[in-house]
Length: 328
Ligand code: UDP
Image 1 (tube, rainbow, N blue to C red):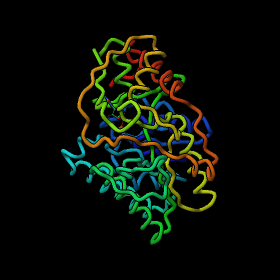
Image 2: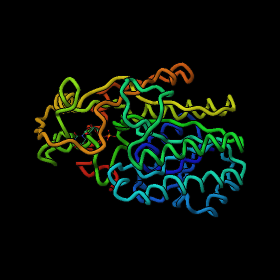
Image 3: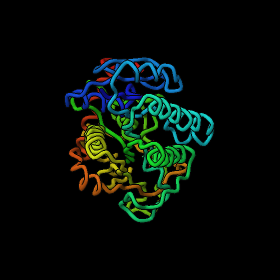
């Protein structure tokens, strides 16, 4: 049995689907602050918070949990600058609370959602796991702190963990049973799709004066199902080899904001109005992840390219527009 903490959110809900499809049994624990109850269509659902030690003990005592996957973090960079306490309490303190319950109850395999934001500003692409990590915002710092805590827990208490650092998670379940629904939505692809659907007048491009070929930021977009398969491989790796590890999860290919807008216009067949604006604070010009280590050790190879990412996101987006997806 796998416990998915935060399994009603965007990434956790897709991992839950893929785990169940692969024959794993799951329990989803989510406080539904940002998650959607309707996104949990597989496994058992428990509404609750990782700050609740008694609830965690009850879950661990009543079920044989082989591994915990942890997705219940706050992830708005801007908000983490405005209100760091919210981030340190939820992303760090509450995670330690979860780890303590695991320790008390003898659960020792932990899969942790980390981020390329732990690297900060990097000059040399693609970003490999061995580069120094110098996050430039509180969100990235909370994730790096947990990475360090996990390493200390491994040494002192023998906890096995796997840290997975995502690049830009994007796309949706190809069957459109679930997908991305953030409130507020700040991510590039769903915002461009809002323009394609006529829900928004234009897409704002945050800066076209970066030192990149077309002046806009370059990112590495990775499909949510590719991320999900990496979680399963990572979990099987640490359980089988009784080890701990970390992996960067990207496609190894970068696309500029203008590339993404162009591809979205082609796929949707709609005109996308663009408005160039100033840079968004904290955006590095380029972030591209190497997937070489994940390929060499886990045999993980991303299968969805940018077009498939946008196609799946568009299919889901249309379902949301038609009122046939879950409510926000
Ligand atoms: N971006 C943009 N306009 C928007 C939202 C995002 O130009 O309305 C840019 C943003 O500056 C970044 C890229 O698109 O370079 C991806 O941003 P997103 O917020 O999707 O993910 P992030 O890279 O911040 O994790």
